[in-house]
Image (cartoon, rainbow, N blue to C red):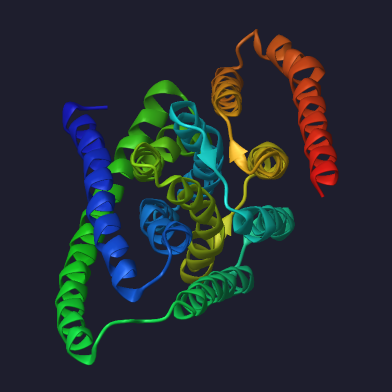
Length: 364
């Protein structure tokens, strides 16, 4: 790996982060002008924007014939969005979880994760699969925005016609400005993704790692940086609904929109490797399922649950590296995880859910 490739690899990360930041700001302001709630902004507009790096990387790698990077990037990003992003945010400040997330969005995330596994059983995501996923993304977006606007319309508008006219002119100016920022941010994302892919391939060859491992770790975390920054800043500023909504919405759009578009646009579709089918996608599903009982207990993610998320992400990353290098500690590590850690976590979650149900019954 020469110095120029390394510089471009780092520059790719920088462009992805700053491009996504510009895009997020523009899209967030655009959503506010449209009159939707902060949670909906997190679930749709911000989620769309912070999923843009995954889309750029997945499309570029799919066209270049690097299918493992495309799929590994999506699966790894979805795992990082929950374990890493929500883990970091919750350790800083306990996150409040909206009832809408628990009743609709998290179950939807779990459902489409299982749908991805089912579609991948034949080893490929073709155009039919892509059409279904993309249609789901459009339907989810429309439903969420329409539902939010209906709720906002229930609040009476006290503005005079003159005030509404001035606001309309101001809104039009803001829309044009934010659209310009969005286009500029997208341009940075496309260029950054190209440099990032080239650097990742060079890294894979240098260290002997598979492209799947690179996609699941380095690129997954790199393209998740916009989500990390957005969720941490939202958590610090008290917009905790936005922090959680951003992570959940990004996971939904990563599967429905990103994989949907890649499967539909790329001529040969997205190839699904055996390791991804047997391990990485099931891990993504397990992480999604683990969200529901944790979110359900008190409708918040506490600090200790944030540390639990982070510890599991560390264990997952360690397993990837042990497996990639075929380290002698791999067998012992896997035994400890499957014999002690995973069962203990399941028991803990069951106890928490039972306590929550008991408390709800008593209060009712």
